Image: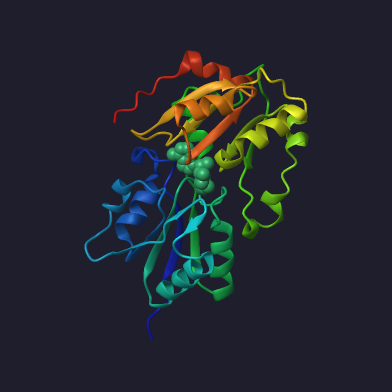
Length: 254
Ligand code: SAH
């Protein structure tokens, strides 16, 4: 009987291929099967060895080309065929990436796995627009929040208490929030954040397609509309967002 393979849940980082870890690069180059989704930079897919099977299970808001349960079943099946499998996920696998669900499925099936962390979108985007998320004197905390409330997401995402987070005073970084930006910014202001609070929205951060707009809680919805900015994007809320005006350095080339 063939030995059971192994699944590596690997973070692909936010986009710039040079932001992936050496470990991610080594594992991609060595695997027999690469299972990836749409936020992964295509450059990484070319690192595979000859004969590696590449399987896209692409996902975007409101559209899942392969249901989560089938992705999990696929990973289990590939490993049971004795293959070394890289499950490549955008950003970090354990930050809003359903990596936890995949790890649980592998554990339940008795399949060996490893998790390879990566630069999550919040950190990549903040760096590439010059926003120090916890700049001294401006912020002592940063909170990552999901703005997505899909019914299958469970109680965590559905129950974000925006007003409570507004009151906390931390820098907030919102993932998957573009579809509900008006509602969320309204809740943050209702929770006590001033309409003048600086906000930055970064789309396709760290890639040649990066675009961003700066504004305030009070006017960011209008600016985003004017700029035609949409998903994938992160929204950075807090005094630190002001530094983007001074510290931005990345010049995307399209
Ligand atoms: N695991 C990923 C997040 C997956 S959820 C991570 O750690 O980054 C998908 C969301 O991540 C998108 O809707 C968007 O909010 C954010 N995102 C991912 N890549 C991004 C990028 N290059 N620029 C801006 N936002 C990005």
